[in-house]
Image (tube, rainbow, N blue to C red):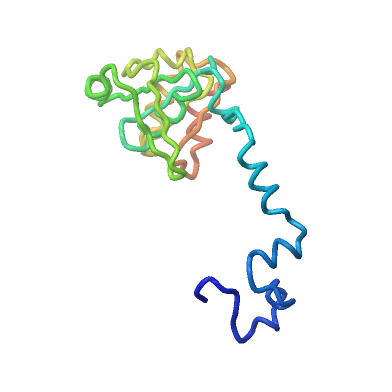
Length: 183
């Protein structure tokens, strides 16, 4: 209260006040902390060089992600993947409009942590043959359209290409197998 450590329950706590410490100077003396030495050390300290976390300092990875869809989920996923990987957006109905709207600009995506990601996909297209370049295909489209995308990509997909469906649905694995066979 008013800059002083006090209160009726002070003696019942494990706080320094319970041992009679009532000021910052008392605390520093009891802790054997030399206030002048700490101030001198802080004044002479050299700032540490700022290191970026590895995820931010890595070069773009040639791993190719194909993000399908034209809605919010597809655009956010495209921006996030494009910051780290070679990324192509495939929108069967919105590619031209999306490409024109983005133009030469980058996405600027603010994460819930406050971090800002700036990125640009390598391409935005409606051409399913780009599936030949993909290491991963992310279907950020309604689940009732998954079969159509599987059919479009089937002639171009490489064996072992990973397919991620969001949202997924019950029986998606059966649909996948029926449209893509051994791929």
